[in-house]
Every structure is written in C-alpha cells, then in structure tokens.
Image 1 (cartoon, rainbow, N blue to C red):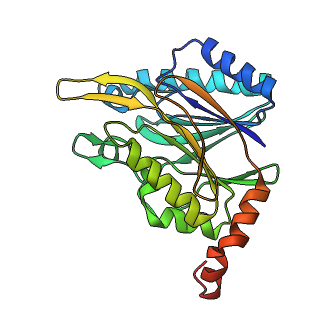
Image 2: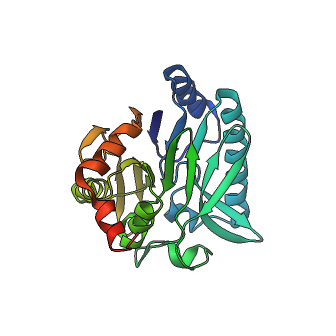
Length: 264
C-alpha cells in the first residue's frame, strides 16, 4: 500500500494547497494520507486566545474541504482536528474517507506548565482505548505524538496486532534526536511500522519561540528509518509491505513470548 505524510504548518482557509498535494498523491497511487498536528487548526498557543466560535468556523470549513477532496481523489485522510461541541473544545483526530468521517478523541494530553492541553481542552479522561481501523489488508492504529510516551499505548498496539501506527505530532525545541530513538525502539520492540507526520513552522510569544522542525519519517518493523524529511513543508511518499511486518514478527518473536505468558 502506498501512503503519504504531509508535514505542514497551519493551512490557509483556501483548499488550493491541499488540492495540490492530493493531486500528487492520486497520481502516485497513494491510498492514505497522514497530516501533521495543528495543520487544520491554528497552533495550540494561538487557540488559547481565539473565541470558540472562531475555532468552530475554522474547523467546520476544513471538514468541508476534506470531505470534498477525499471524494474527488478517492483518498483516506487522517488529520488531527479541534471539535467544538456545545461550547466545549475537544482535541480529536478525524478519519476522512470518500463516504464517511470518524472521530477519535485524544486520550492523553500534554499537561506541562508552558503547554497545557489537558487544562484547555474538554476531553474526557477515561480508560485508554486504542483507535484502530483496517484499510485493505493493513491494520492501522492512530497514536498522537504525546500518547507515544506511554507503555499502555504500545501494549494495546501489540495486543491488537497492529501493522502500522500513524502518528501526527507537533514536536518542537531540541527533541528531534530523542524522537528518532523513541520511534526506532517502539517500532522494533512491537514489530510494526510507524509513520510520523510532524509539524513545521514557527510560533513566538512573549515568553519563548517555538520552532517545529518536521523530520517526518517512516520507521520499519526492524527499527530502521526508511525515509525521513527535512525541516520545511514537504510530502513523504512511502510503500508499506505487510510481509515485512510478518517477517519481523517471526524473526524476533516478541509477541509469541508474551502470548506464552498470557500477557497479550
């Protein structure tokens, strides 16, 4: 299966840029596109100062654009999005297909002093449930960048026999090398692909400057980086082979050893 990751800053209201990239994907035979975090909506620090009605207008417009483009190009798109329901703000990820939209609300949210999504958004804190869907014969899971830090997430991914984790993120500051090692380790120990789409662009407030470095990448089930982008707006096109997942499982046997102990 051919996939694509778009590393973007916040998209303008015009659909022209997405249409351009989607047309490329159609020509290349891509079936699924992953968008980086805060591509459809403004970055979190900007949202903090925006009225809920303005956020809702931004969200509704982007939903309309994605619905139209998915039908036009027959694509499935995974895109983080901020939903506004009865005045409450929900951080979610949307799965757009030519015929439907499904939403998966994020379950772990950043709660640092300088970046507190958990306090700002109205997501319900409850028992973790991994978002899973199947396309063709490939089994996908959606894991946000922050959620990638928690062992419980990967235990669920192994338990549900996931082939590829789709990871939209908005990582910044000096974390690129740490992220590279984290993704390599998680993919190797779980015998699965990870496709990460990380944000690009800059945001500056009175306290600090946020530079989103991109470096979106595909990591294979052996923990090897197959493809990686730079620090500017780009598209990553890649091929996923389920046979590689099957071979990695057989070679290392992590899942089999856990199953013997009734741990998955």
